Image 1 (cartoon, rainbow, N blue to C red):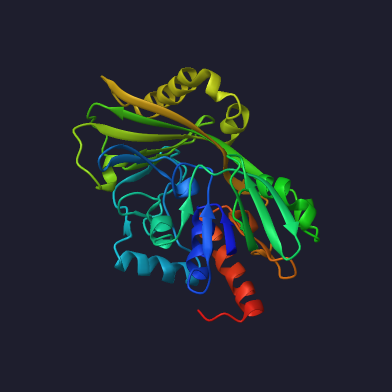
Image 2 (cartoon, one colour):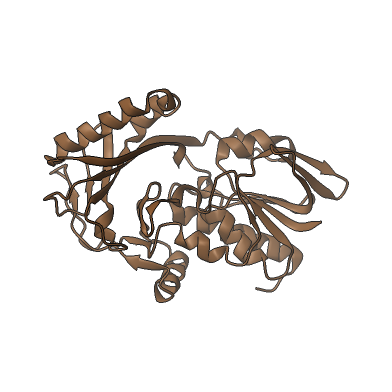
Length: 329
């Protein structure tokens, strides 16, 4: 039997796992193919790839700044230098705005935190039950496990669906809004554009990143990440899979129009819909822990919408567990 079963390998799941591994038998489960959640890295070939979720980190809190600095020293994170443009001329560029990225990919943080931890991917949770003094968990592949404690590090709607009958507070009566977006990965011929990223003032295309500018790899072609606005994503994320080429072309054509880029040849495209890309109207508490039944919840939707909020939520949850269990760090 496990001491802790953790569902989700994003920043909050990987953070709480890294705290708990010292004193406990734990396992992490995630329905995705790999680690990182919304900070995942889409590999194309070798070291070449795209950050197709998280854009970058800009630490704000004292605690997260300290954590980020440690990762910079360990060469897990690095500064993303370059020319970051605002296509909306009314917005002034913040020259002191820090942008941190993973040295190899933005999922580097979760990879680092989950080192030497038993992780199980492509494992989608379908049912949880409370049996006497433990949790019974069944997955869609019919795998099942028992655990003394259960930590859910998943988006608000999923957490509500699977655990609401066990949560005795008004936690799920809150209306956390989950934002959606479409992301297109694009490989083109070398272009004359020198900018590292663009923030737009458009209703369809919200942000563009030139992946080459992150200096992780050398490539004879240009790699781009095009992210839609939440407004556009809300309307189209649920049905994009039936018209992938159509939505891919919409974002690419917007990219061409807004930046005046001259694309002679397209070598690769991929589109992904993030149903739970971000959140708004987040909760005003950091995490949830019920010591009587050993149920914990954490995620950026507790303080949202930044990755930093997910880390702070997991840290807060661990502190609650530690006070109850009298752990040592």
